[in-house]
Image 1 (cartoon, rainbow, N blue to C red):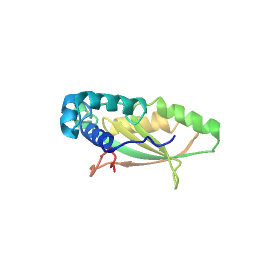
Image 2: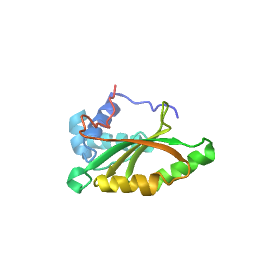
Image 3: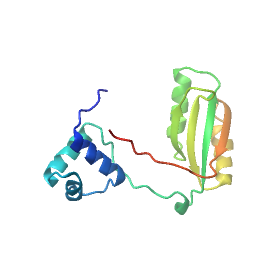
Image 4: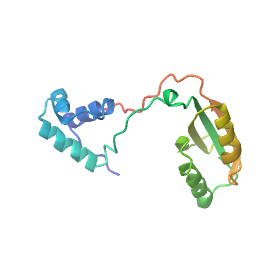
Length: 156
């Protein structure tokens, strides 16, 4: 997909919305020195172009009872489109998997999971992940402390 052409105002709008996706067009206008209607048009164009994929609230997992985060490295028994499609369906069907990546290196996939506690983690590994016929090996790390978890992009 080609890169979307943007000017400094578009970049300023994106930067502000990364920090506060609920910002009104009036507040955005004051921040980026455009009128509210210009901000509204630019925001809509960025949404239409797919540059802005959506808006969401950042929730605190611990305050909602999800006290365990783990990184799981998975190796498949064999490779091929069917096996990878099966694993992708497994990932999609399990909401405790918050992010999943096909990677280079010693693992085929990296999963970022959020669960309530160690018992729920054990249940996920032993009752859901390991029984998958395409899974050959699972290695996991429990996150002890998060040093940085910033999903915003550094814009030019």
